[in-house]
Image 1 (cartoon, helix red, strand yellow):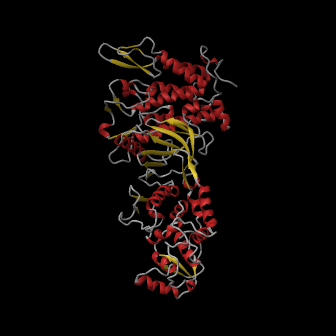
Image 2 (cartoon, one colour):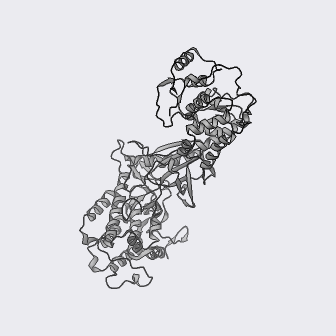
Image 3 (cartoon, one colour):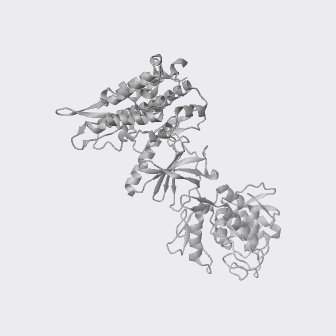
Length: 617
């Protein structure tokens, strides 16, 4: 922003001019005249603009609001209040340096003048170098000239901090240093005797007047500066980087405007729903999931943080894998920022009635059925990109290893009627090279117990097939929910647990689990076997659909899940490419293939309480 300064009115040297240390004003910016109300006006506006981050109860001033408040006229008025002994030329020159980049169209000629020359022009008693004197003479011969600091940046944030701590007159020290907003945050010694910009030479301290209370000023400034330095998040992506990794000082205030009372456990982290202030949010949505890693040893914390970050960086954005918005290092804390899933996860979805979902989306049952197939295909297709990274010269193979309902998010506001499902939480995902993609592992990791594969308990074989098993379990429960509702999902779990009755674990005795397999003892080894309740349950579901539904989606996919995805022998289990090809074939089926007349809630003891062909009108 450029402002006209009439150089013909620049005062000559006057030894009677009050100095900064004079008696009229004191260094706190307090004056003995009645113009203090003007200075207080800016202070009140800054305080009213403060927004509280509810996570840490600290306040920040939104960036555009800050620039709007610290406009040229407001700065001139505040300077006039703080420096009543100076004339308008001084106040305008200082305001020009403070508000440098704010929008204004100069109506007169522009000369480029070094930053320090402004101070010389506005304060005639200041000594100048020979080059500065020459420049001043050049300016003085030209009236109505805009004095524009050369290669300078604004410092209205510094000015705002000085207003907030009641030290407006100290702007002279910052301008003569010179310092600008890009030099923030400023650092200080532990005893607050010196202050400098960490972006400059540490020995280049800010020179405050001798009669200043250095401890109070430096401590207040370094504390208050964070309120004007709330960071901005944007869609910074490149071909090799899916998100920006932000590194903030531990005192930085994140621009969070709202935070949910409910917290969600996310493996090694706690997840909160937050709203980022619109002036600091460069994305196309308001709400985010902030994943804060639990406190742990620094080495372990950074290992898990980097592992999840690497996993997201290695996969292509979009589709059915959750997008990452930002990775954040803030002091000792580590965070990830994701879009907030408005529909929750699969457990949230399954708590509803399927009819409620289609009614809300205003679609037919056949559209809902085909949507399910499309989502399943998209998930497996994108999982395939994790399992086989053919674009990598070293050919890396990824394994998610933590597939469960909590990690399949439901986005209802993605522009489509029924929304979309996305895989989340890549924190346990590991990438292996060709020679280690199928390995015996001393630890299979923290796979969710319900969806863990037989090889987790037998032989410790870690391969990509563990993800196929987990999705077989998950898809079986999803189809159960559609056909029998939420009570059906719970009844299916009970059936699986009942299958364990009478099966003794030689180490722990009788043990009931709602997983999908048992280990059948043999004389010299144990053999994995799919639980009998799985076969019985699938048979019931297909029977309830009725014989006229044999050539439709649900019975065909249920049969495929049981035979190919839930095969207890890993070597005979389908891989990602095979499942993807099967679902792609189903997607091309004609409209009558997707017919389904609706969910009938499960009632224990009567095979779902469904009559005839198991449909409702």
